[in-house]
Image 1: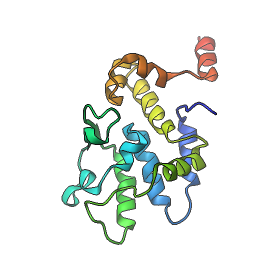
Image 2 (image 1 turned 135 degrees about the vertical axis):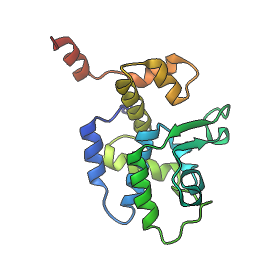
Image 3 (image 1 turned 180 degrees about the vertical axis):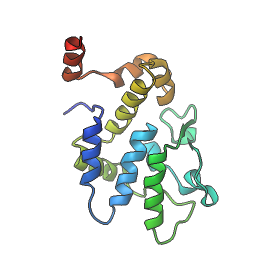
Length: 176
């Protein structure tokens, strides 16, 4: 079994270019939203159009209720990233009829895993790890901010998301 790890920018771009066929807009939207929101796959699969685009207007934040969160203790809200919104809008426009109460991604966790595995070589949790790494980098390495962005209650849990690769260690050692 391989350990889930964050996708590099190049790996993310390569994965995006691998989507082909009928459901490519949907599948791209899933990957982008997963990487840009940090939601777990079960949280992504619980989303309904009315949470993202109520009354035809895109929301600025996505709220997943505590009923769909791991542990079911509290809800979590994340800003809707512009790239994710663009891919969601393209996907929504490709649908014949959109019922706002319908699921955005109407398939099982296994199907989602298979979609992401096909293009990344990893399971769905790599999206959440990629989100964590990006927030960590863009926040000037503020682990408390990452903890809050992921909705973790303990920083030790967040630390597991921020493992280093050998190439990152080598770069840090060799950098003058």
